[in-house]
Amino acid sequence: MNKNKFNLKKNIFQSLIFKVIAMVSGVILVPIVLHYLGKEKYGIWVTLTVVFNWFGFFDFGIGNGLRNKLSEANAKGNFKLAKELVSTSYVLISLIFFFLFAIIVILSPFANWYKIFNIGSSFNENFNLLILFLAGGFSFSFILRLLAPIFFANQHAARKYMADTIGTVISFVLIVTVTKIVKDSLSFLLIIYVFSPLVVYGLASIYFFNKDYKAIKPSFKSINFKLNRSIVGMGTQFLIIQLSALFLQSSIFFLINFFVGSGKVAEFNVAFKYFMVVRIGSQVFYTPYWSAVTDAYSRKDKKWLINSFKKTYIMAFLFIVGLVIMYLMFRQVSGIWIHQRNFTSPDVLLGTFLYVVIFTLTEPIMTFINGIGELKEQFILSIFVIMFCAPLSIALFKYTQLGVLAFILVPALLRLIKAVAGFRQLGKIYLLKFV
Image (cartoon, rainbow, N blue to C red):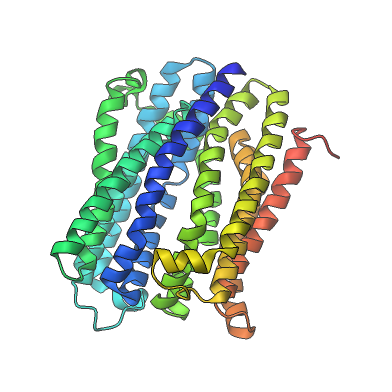
């Protein structure tokens, strides 16, 4: 597995560089946008971007299905199948997102977006038109972002982070410019946020499909709908797993906004962005492992799998040490960062810290389960999460003294349950040495 080791080290090192640049841009952008929009509008900004990112979870798991199937085809040197997988996936995902966009266009005139997003009547921008712009932009963006699982399947994770970083930097420059020349415009910021990555992934697709990935460049001749079951079969399981991930993270923003208000969303987002400094590092480390695990499992290299799993957990504990230090220093850093030491309340700060710790601790298990592709148990648990995450959170919010903590801790505990089940599942397939 020398090739795997080389690709992992190369991808982790390069990805880290790109992620650091993106992270710095994002961290600097938080106080700029917060002071530009104010606390309430900033909460709306966060909620809208999170909700429209949900669109990515409605690809029926095609992206992750393609990622695993393409990794297997590459491991076997079957480039004809690889080209068919890529071509068919682009057709399927295009049909899905055009359909979703059409639904929003049809329903938008009848939807009360102000009530859905808990926005007061004092909001002075054309919200309905803004929703259509965002829906269109995100739809095209997610079609073009199918390039990301192709990067991962070819063990070029750093290229995905490079594209994301370029998009982030462009957004950063344009947003800072807008804050200097346009007064208090949420619409301009959101349009920039949506369309910058769209342009970057469009140009990246043209470049890579005419260079490194020319052999698998999508074409009408290579569309093979017989592969639908292969892609969507695994993809459907990934869809449910993705939806559960959606409920475990993004629903926090929506529920806090709906039941408490956008001001509390702003508090949570500041703490979340702060701890994401470590989470980004962990994601950079773990992401390349997914496709490498798929490759190793296809080759039945259990020794590499066992050793790699141990390494990921050593890193997980180091990341958690970093999170503890960050938690203890939050007030001092917050005073320097957004010029407000007490912007985030103690309960929100503690809840966000515990949430991020649990996700960091469980990341290696979920990465290996996804890479191996043994998804049945996770699929069943994910259905449970989708059904009960929001009701449990709301019930605890209404009938206990937890308050806003209910919306943060319930998803964290459900994630922990999924991870425990995943750990036992890894043992069943003899990945780990325990009974």
